[in-house]
Image (cartoon, one colour):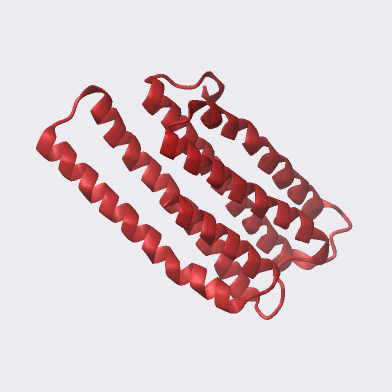
Amino acid sequence: MASLVKTAMERATTALLTPDLTLAETVISDDSVIDSIQHDLDARTINLMARQQPVASDLRTLVTSLRMSADLERMGDLAHHIAKQARMRYPNIAVPAELVPIITDMGRVASQLIEKLSVVMEHRDIVRALEIESDDDEMDKLHRTLISTLLDDNWAHGIEAAIDMTLLGRYYERCADHAVSISRRVYFLVTGEYAKSAE
């Protein structure tokens, strides 16, 4: 799921900035694959819980997997929303020229977070899990810069573009928040404790 979400986010960002309608449509249609995986994983997890009545660490693993798959599915939805924004403004580029660097950076940070998250989940790497929370700070800074630009008196692109950019900024920022959420769950899964930085 994480690999598919990373691909979706990268393609959605490219579709947004190029603009590329075919790529946007691909992201939109492929979102159903991520949804299907989540539904399958949830069904298998609930089945295991019902048949085997797990306790202790086994139960923690299953409950955590349900929550993580929900976060990943939501991240896929956010890429889907970005692609829909690209499609809605096509053949124009949805992002004003002066904001292209910020959106490019937000897309890059989102992709890097998802890539690190894949390692965290696969290897139950609690060191990198803790890093993700600090990595998210870069996304937060970019989001604040974006909002400051939109609120500046010199903004010359009108209300509609400001709304578009507000939504796009929120999609990237929320994607990073979901990555943090999953990293915290992995930390809890491994240690049985909540990370101090997450309290």
